[in-house]
Image 1 (cartoon, rainbow, N blue to C red):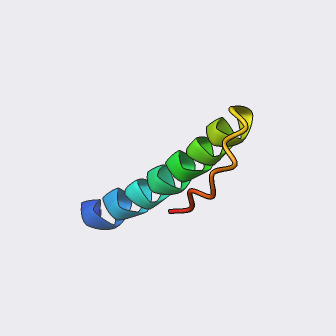
Image 2: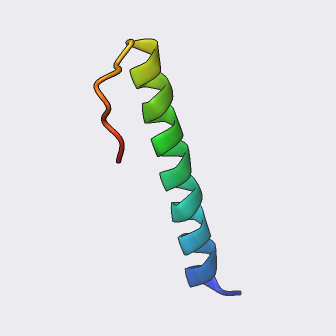
Length: 37
């Protein structure tokens, strides 16, 4: 059981999800200020 691989994949998914969520929230607010991370 490789905990490190599980953890890194989890963090990668979390990061992806968070960036998607931030994009959706900014679009919902009409935030067209060109903030791209």
